[in-house]
Image (cartoon, rainbow, N blue to C red; front, side):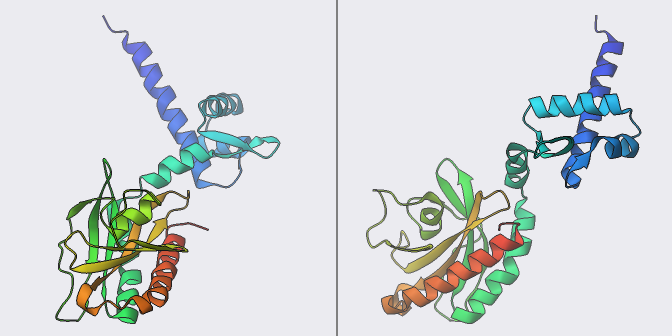
Length: 231
């Protein structure tokens, strides 16, 4: 038979801890007295919850002041890693449109899809009649496309023709019909959440322009990263 009173007490404890954590996450240097007033709890209760959250690695004291608290890097990384695709795409679209307008080429947002794969999450089309037309939702092996390679780092299994420069990578598409120039995008925790990819049809690609175009992709990726909270 279940002890309903014990269950209710456990639920209240969890809800109390979540309320305290939420307040700490919303502030810079949350103090015990302020939390007690805001949450209408005793200081001793707040201190007990803070110690529990600290022991679990979710919060930490700010500097040497054990009466002031902030969320810990572990929690911050987890919160940032759950940035929704909708929010990422919302912030990415104006940056992608500006990059398309500057270069005249199609721009894709590639994001990790798990199990070593990446997926096209958004695409801003070139005005050229000949352009990349891969639909949003297309999944690739991360080792086979520029966006995936930008997220993976250098490896021995890169496609033939891959070129790496400071901050960006160029690689042919699996079909050989286009060249992708990609740079990684990070969030406020420093985690890589995607890559911006400039997609140039092979017939229009000129290798001597790659350094200039690659630099523009890097700048756009940095702009999007800053919009997501990266330094």
